[in-house]
Image (cartoon, rainbow, N blue to C red; front, side, top):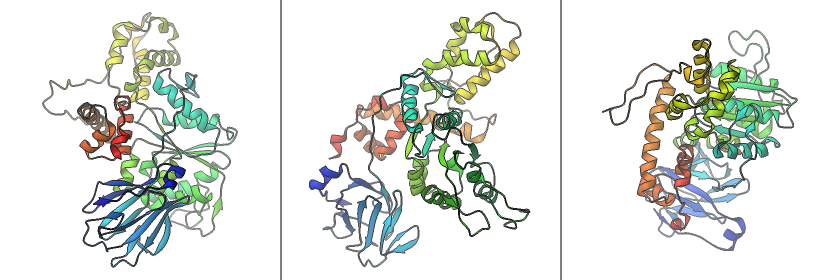
Amino acid sequence: MRVTRVTNQRDALFGRASRLRVLAGPDAGLELELPPVGVVIGADPGCDVALTDPSVSSRHCTIAPTAAGFHVVDLGSKNGTSIDGVAVGKVTAPPGAVVRVGKTLLQLLPADEMVTIPPSGRDHFGAMWGDSPAMRQVFAVLERAATSDASILFLGESGCGKELAARAIHDESPRQHGPFIVFDCGAATDTLIESDLFGHVRGSFTGAAGDRQGAFAAAHGGTLFLDEIGDLPIALQPKLLRMLEAGEVIPLGSRKPERYDVRVVAATHRDVFGEVAKGGFRGDLYYRLAVVEVHLPPLRQRREDLAKLVAIFLERAGAKHLVPSIGGPSLDRLAAYHWPGNVRELRNVITRAVALAGPVKDFGELPILLRPTVAPAAAAEPVVKADRPFHQAKDEVVDRFERAYLTDLVERAAGNLSAAARLAGLERKFLYRLLERNGLRQKAAGGDADDE
């Protein structure tokens, strides 16, 4: 694919342009910026974006970013231009939409903007505690986001405290006197999820003996926390998007929309951005949920918080007298552990140790039981045991792979983020997220100049 970069004064006025990513086709994996004036896409070498796909017309379509999304216009192409399987002539597509031209899939992405916020001066936010730089940065974002009605998406591994964060956002928001409702998107079948989330009317399905309000109705005037939003069936995602955009839902079996005043906070341990690229999660819903996106660091990336967290859990377990003696080999063991279950696992380890210890006078006397680990040098191949839930065991293996791969990648690229993205065959924003999730972002020097 040949790209002709279009620049003029409007680039400076509007800032960095939006982006176009090729998801599938002969030019898959390539990405370019969309200037405010837009681009002409086609097979002709004279087009702004010249694709090598033989099924693309000479001048196939135009795409231009607007305040409302992306303006897509078909230029009388032979095979047509379609979005989500629907042929379009002229349409404004939302961020994240996937456009098909010939056999090529193009994803429309908003500008990648970063906002720098100074770390918070607090060591806690709601029931969350942390004095590490990583947590103070999280608290700084939450303090600002709590006062607004913007949707928030929490990303992080299981056990990082996503529900605690959502509850804290609610408690420090203007909605604090309203209801706080938790809904698990991965807890039931499609029909039951739709009924529980949006409500249903009598007779809408077998067993529906009467009308029932859903989670949105229950959260009216307050906050709805959608846990594990990455597990929400894709067929239900348009209804959720409608609620977020218009503030109304249609109960299952009804034709009458109901309006609710609800702030939505969502969370998932999945890589939703990656799922959007693969088509497993709607891009327009992702961008609507992630108005504020917050990455909660795993415990292994904030080990300086370990001693204080241990003290908190000892007090909760009724062993406050052991707090002054925290330290020594027992604390060293905890610090060296990889914590696949994060803060939740630490809480369980301390609670179990206190329960099994009996009357002890020193922290070092506690019977601290940790999962056995296999040293990388001694293991010819990964040891996999079915001693915990599948997704948890899988996430642990993937996490070890990601960190090892990214560490070597950053070293090979001498800390240059653009060079690292090219070596790995990844888009820069996706690589940034991987580095941030694994606590390696500070090792990358950036490298925007290389992209020109």
